[in-house]
Image (cartoon, rainbow, N blue to C red):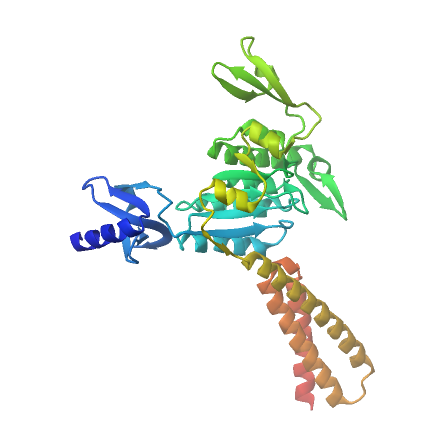
Amino acid sequence: MITVLVLLLVAGRICPADTFTNIKTGEILHGYATTQTVDNLTVVQAAGKDKVNLNLADWIVTADRNGRNNTVIVLSLDRMIMYEIETAVLEEALAAAVDTGPLFILLEIDTPGGRVDLAQRIAAAINKTKHCQVISYVKGGENGGAISAGVAVALACDKNYMATNAVIGGATMITISGDAPMDLKKAYGSDVGEKFSSIWKASLASLAEKNGRPALMARAMVDKEIEVVEVEDGPGRMFIDPVNKKPAQQLVKTWTQKGSLLTLTATEAVQCKIADKTVGSREQLLRLLDAADAEIKIDNRIQQAAKELSRATLKVKKLREKIDLELKQLKSVKRRGRGMSLVRKVRGRLRTMIVLAKQYPDLQLDLEQLQKDYNSVEAFYQQHKRAR
């Protein structure tokens, strides 16, 4: 252990990483914790490329950060949060990024929102990223910033920076009826709709509080009945419901009134501590975070997953067209051999559809019906095969 410690300290002077100080012995290691474990011990990538397994409860970890690998991993959430494949890939990408020991993970966000359940999964994955900071950069791109479900993702990050033209908020829950959005209370009834909304409000409030942001502001992004005012309270300021304002508290600003859902500009978000600062670009943000000379590693696996799903969707469409055509041809076939050939094709295509349905839940294929169709075709094939 002493030999290993000496090697680590020598390497640490060359490239000091996060500092691990043993509570009992005072031993010092330099490295970064990974997501990997061995016998319930955390695998730490130590300076000098040695790995050690530590019980982190026995160590004080000081995040020096400047001695980690001089890299920044960039992930982009730049479309609707709608697909499980993209969510799963983002979860994997976060864990993979931690294990490379970057200065931090930069999650660039520009989303109009999407499925609440998937946004909550992403937020949970960010919360689980214990050994490396996840920093959000809310861009003012095509979608305008972090809207609706995207709020959860931004609030989950350790730090939240916003482009000057970005916005954040408007996180009320809705459902889709046909092609039109519908209020949850109208869709599911007052009690059920309120239950869903209450859970979502509590979730955003919890994410906000975790990183020292005002929970009431997060709730006001969901519920237009919530009012928020900012008051001076001694040396500091507070965000409260106006009914809770005390006579000694001086009103600073009314942020939202009943009937208005809270959506904040970048400047407003900084003023009310939902965001840490506004920046004009990724480059400016990197300079601000002392990472201007870091190697930027773009992780495109989310975008690759989107393309993969697009290819699978196109494949399903073509399979359906071919199956429909071959079934029509089968009705007019008089030669048994030709008919059996078509049946084999349909059977093979249905088998492929079943595989795709299992592999890509986002395709929303009716797996049960596909299996019934396949069984029917298979039975027909076997019956006529025996009759030949």
